[in-house]
Length: 193
Image 1: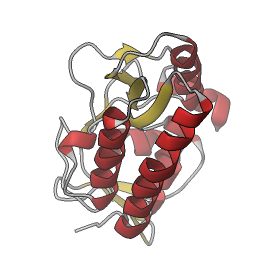
Image 2: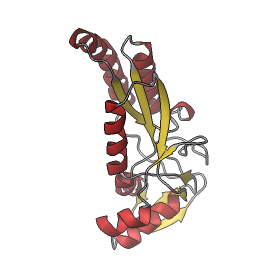
Image 3: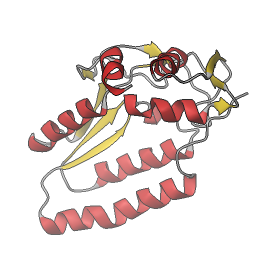
């Protein structure tokens, strides 16, 4: 069974979240910040078996408990992370991935939305942001490897893990009615391979 390595360690993730809560909120209040914008991850509340996602959830709770008006933008995985997803699941020349649905997005689309949100009134809430199309994780990586001339072979393995945890078709996809970025994976890939 492939075990993708989680990003960072649980200790690092928790340390960051605690540091943010202990320093950012008081500093924002002292500076008169009127809108805290946070970028989080779609599925955070469904992936709590991972220390990274537990830390992201703790970070979101600290932001919501703060007196500073806020907006949390939960984005799906970025197209730019596909190489890392492949690398984390590689054993020799084989990339073993689960066939779970994803709805990845271009980081430029995320940046544009976060900039718009920062200039808008705070929502004091959370919304989800995703790419315009759903794709299975193994197919996403397969397309990426082919487009970049990478000879590794993708093996579809329903038991393969993502960031060290089991995932399903709801884990990495947004709920109903997310805000959608315009860039399709094929278009991004043609410009970035």
